[in-house]
Image (cartoon, rainbow, N blue to C red; front, side, top):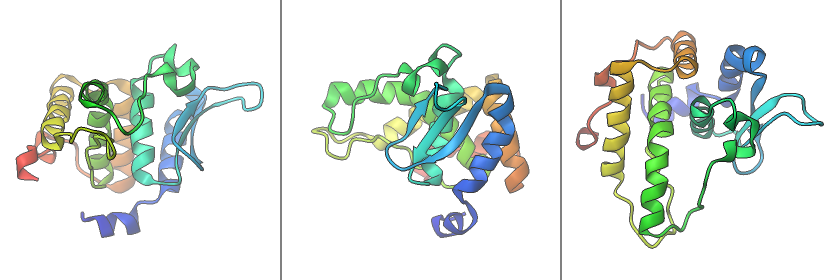
Length: 186
């Protein structure tokens, strides 16, 4: 599926419906369209449920934020943005390397979600104004290794539930290694 097709067949309200159907009752968590940068907000005195706010209605942003939620354990899900470290765009070489290390797991899940939804995946090095040019191909190879590991060893319960719901909604085939080409083949 090319990007133009994805833009006409993939809309963020679909993801909100799919995610909330899968997780709102059991995990008291809802996917919501945010107006600014993405953020995870635990339930508080004003809002009695946890929120995964994704950026500006972007379908890809929603998938990425869901991947972080799927990795976060119970204690992390009680903290704003899961208590994760984040250094914004403009990173030096060392900080970029650290950023990529922590992004391998969520981006592997994001790629799996994209394939399950029939939506194009773009690995994100997220450093447009940094003083180092990230090696996108090398990073995507690491992400692919993680995907293949999950396919071989088993996908954890929450991401597997979401993948199955995406398969059902978009009528896509079961994930196999062939769906995740080696980056040189892209």
